[in-house]
Amino acid sequence: MTRTWTFTDLEFVVLWENLTGELLPPPFTVTSAIPLYYDYLREKRETSERLDATLGGAFDHVLTSIARPDLRITVNGWDTQDSGGEQGSLRLLATRAGSHGYLVRQLPGETPHDSGSFTISACDPIGLAAAVVAALPDTPPATQDEIPLAAPGSGSDDVDHFIEQSPTAAEFSNLVSVRSKRFFRVLPTRMGTIDVVQGNSVFGPRGIARHRLEWRDLPDHGRYAIRHAAPWKAVGADTQKFASMINMCVADVIRAIKDERRA
Image (cartoon, rainbow, N blue to C red; front, side, top):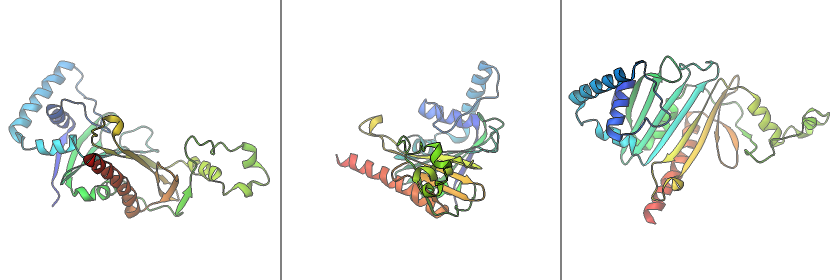
């Protein structure tokens, strides 16, 4: 049975700050509903005392694994139909530290800047990618297997307007630049980014390996996943395919960690 803990937003803030002395990690954000600063400090102190009495240090190993992991997967997702509301947001942090894996989820609050609560679930560190994909809104894979995309900054997406509108436009319909523009013109119903990041590096921040993917749920099409690396392409992705794409990034990070340890 999966072990799961639930904390209010203030409880999670207090636990995190007491252990790390730091602000909450991305993608989490909390804005207190307590209007007065000294009232907020009092609430934090009382919350800290209550948590000490109920948890003691028994939860420290879980938080340490989350705060100082070998790698982390950060998920930021949103519903484009939600008009900036919080109910359509998705904020996840999955971490792997040795033989321990955890998935932290910030549940929706009343505004985009607060939350109702946080849940922390233990999971198989090898199955971290699958746990992340399972936490995404359920959407069928896109009907088209693969769409080549123009690389950002390549200039190939700046197709002349007259080419697209000319009588011979059919000749250009398969150009990567044209197909890319058509793809990104479709407003997704939901979309988001997934960052797979090395926990730390002996070479400092510049040595940290990081990879990004995004997903776009297109109306009447389904879910596409895009890895931000060459060759750029949107791939129709079911849960297994999407987890496999994330795992490729995880494997790259683990390879970087092993290379550092051998250096």
